[in-house]
Amino acid sequence: MAAHQAMHSSNRRRERARAQFSRRRFLTGLGAGAAGAVGLGATGVAQAQAPSPSGPGVLQTPADRFARMYPNLGPYLQATDQARAAMMAIGEPGGVMDANDDLEAGPVELITNPDLRVNNPDNPNHTAGVHFFGQFLDHDMTFDLTSPLGVPTPPEDSPNSRTPAFDLDSIYGGGPDVDPEFYESDGRRLRIESGGLFEDIPREADGSPIIADFRNDEHAIISGLHAAFIMFHNNVVRMLESQGFGGDVFAEARRLVTWHYQWLIVHTFLPLFIGQAMVDDIAQNGRRFYTPDPGPTPIPVEFQVAYRFGHSMVRPSYRLNQTGDGGEPFFGFIFDPAAEGQDDPDDLRGNARAPRRFVGWETFFDFGDGAVRQNKRIDTTISTPLFQLPLLAIPTFDEPVALPQRNLLRHLTWSVPSGQQIAQWMGERWIHLQDEMGPYGLGLENQTPLWFYVLAEAERDADGLTLGPAGGRIVGEVFFGLLELDPSSYLAAEPDWEPTLPSQTPGDFLIQDLLRFAGVDPESRGLL
Image (cartoon, rainbow, N blue to C red):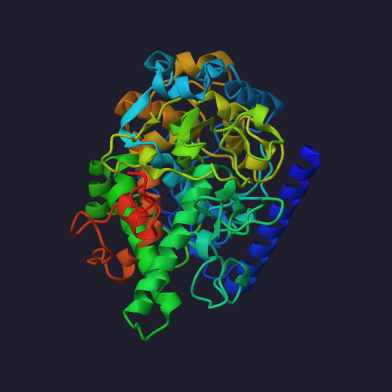
C-alpha cells in the first residue's frame, strides 16, 4: 500500500511539473531571447582548444536550455562502461565520500555528541539553515527533468523548466492568471494551509504538494521555507493594502519580496558560500568567465555541477523544532529508510502533514537564544543518509538512490570538463588528488570530476568554510550574472536600492528579518 501511494504521489508530481513547464514554454516562447555562450579567459590546458576568434556570443543557446561556461574545454572522460563504473564506485555507500555516520546512535546523539562528528565536522561560520536556503535558490533557477544520468546529452537539448533568474518563479509559478491553483480567489495572496499547529504548503489529499516546484517538498525544512515565503508575500500584500497602495498590489508585492530576497543572496548568502573577498572582486572588477550576451541567460552545466557543493553541508540529522513532538523537540534523520510508508514519518522527508512537522527556525538561523546549530563543512565527506534517498526525493523517481553517484554521473551526461582543466584555464593553481582519485584509474587524479574537485578544493584551500578559488568563481560569477542580466532585478533596475521592510539592522536585511515579517519566527509563535 505504501509503495502504491508513493508511486501515485510521484506520478502526480511529475504530471504537475510537465504541465507547469508546458505553460512556461507557451508564455516565454520556445527558444525566445537567445543568449550567447560565455566568453573564455586565460590560456588553456590539456584538451583545450583555442578560443573562437568570434569572441563571446558565437554560440547561441536559448534561455530555456542549458549552455556551457567553457565550450572550448573538451570532456575529460568519455562515457564508457569503465567511466560509469568509476563514478558509481567513487559515490557508493561506504566508499571514499561516505562520512560513515553512526546512524545506530540515533539522530539526537549525532547532533549533541562531539565524538560522533569527528569525521563529519561542523562549519562554525554557517548555521544549519544556510544549506537549505541554497537549495531553495537552486530550485528557483534550474530544473532538469529530462537528461539521462551517465548518457551524453548536449546541454542545449536539455530543457530548464525554471526561469534562469532569481525571480521566485518556484513560488509564483506563472502568476495568478496562469496558475490560479497556487492563489487565493483575490489573485493577490498565495494559498497557505495549516499542518495542525502552524503553516503548511497547500496539499492534495494524498499529501502531494500544490506548489510551483514539487522539489520544495523534498523534506520538511525546504517545504517550511517555501511556506515562509508564501506568508512573507501575503504579509507584504497586507501591508500594501493597509497603506492604501493604488497600483497593482500583487505586482508590487512580488517586486518587494523578490528584491529583498535578492538582497539576501548578494549580501548574506553569497559571502557565506564563496567568501566576502570573492564577492567584492566580482562586484568591483566584473565577471571574467560568465559573460553571455545580454538578455535571458542560460544556466551553464559547469555551474549545475559545481553548485551541488551544498550536498556536503547537509547534516545527517536535525532538530526540526523544540516543542512539536508532544511538547518535546522533534529530532529526525534528514532521510531514513525505516520511515518509508509512515503517515507521519520519523524522518524529515516531505509529502507528509502532521502537527509536529513544522520548522522551528531558531535551530536554523541565529535569533540570539543559543538554540542555533551549524552546517557541515564544504568537503568531500557526505552525510551517510544521502547515500539512500527515498525515491520521492528524486525528481525523476529512478535509481541510483545514492546522491553522490547521481552527481558524479552527471559529469558524463553533460561531458563536463575536469576540475583541473577549469582551474588551470582560470589561471588558478590546480590540485593533484592522487590519494582520493588514484585508486579508480582513468587518470582521475589529474582529471577529477568537477563536483569532487570543487569539494576537495574547498577543503584544502578554505578549510571547508567556503568554496575555493575555482568553485567560488564559477558560483559567484553565475550568481552575479543572473542578477545583472535580469532587467527586473534590483541590481539591474536600481543598483543603489536598499531594503525597505522592517529590519533589526538598519540598511541591511537578514533572513531572520524575512522570517519575522512572515510571522514564522520563534517570537511570533510564542516560543521564546
